[in-house]
Length: 361
Ligand code: PLP
Image (cartoon, rainbow, N blue to C red):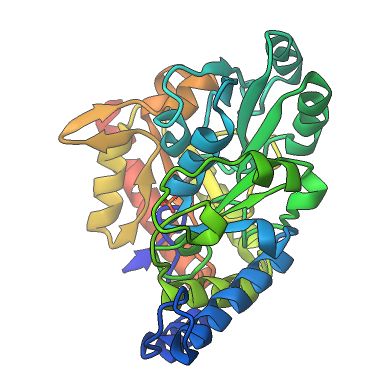
């Protein structure tokens, strides 16, 4: 099996596995005052410090969550009260579902947020703006620092969803100038089940908990934290030192798809090095995903499939792709992808494209 769906979840990094195994047998609850509790707390706080340092935050303002979805929801619930919500048109459902009545910030045909439109939207009163650092379907990077520079003079806060970016490109919360930032363990090679919300000092003061509970995480998120999972999260983040050869492998995958008739979506935008969204005119996305799966290659559709119903990708529609929005698949290379994997994909893709385009002709 060739796994090219890292944006859904990354394979576990060996450093994370080792860290989880080392902590699984630790008995204490980090909230307990006795020695066992203190030992668990030490592991939790070490992970907090490591993650804050890795992503440009401060440990006292990093809140552990169950993952990226909760971190996004926490930011919107905790910082959005009494504010208008403005979200990028290509945000993940984790943001869209938590802000159902938000105003949409349009994107251009590369998927990049329109900053003139943002400036106009910001005139309407105090807002919380949500903008992702890297898109999960296309890899397109957003102008987050420029958005922060527009938001703050207008009295708005900026939440950044860095779930796909963290571990795959340099991510520095302080340098971005945002008020909160979501990251997720399983998207950077850690175990699923943990994420974090990084907060600025001011946002930390304003934050209202989404899950109040027993006062954990300085009262910002109740519930006993999964210490072993969090140790794995920190170890994975430490091991995720950058894209390595992934950009070259992604380019190789794109060249072979283009040679078979595909169009690269958002090709001219700055993008994540591991991600490409390729459309094959005339071939339905889900047909492509199934054909590649039968050939032993795991990829995903730009169009999301739920309960047998196929809906078009809101990301590709917002980019104005028209019919291509239903004909695009996402290739997202995991941290351990090899050239042989990409060659296998290229062979399977070219055979599939020849078959499907012959049928369409
Ligand atoms: N934000 C983005 C951009 C994502 O791609 C995802 C997951 O695909 C999430 C948030 C949700 O993260 P999690 O799976 O950790 O809840």
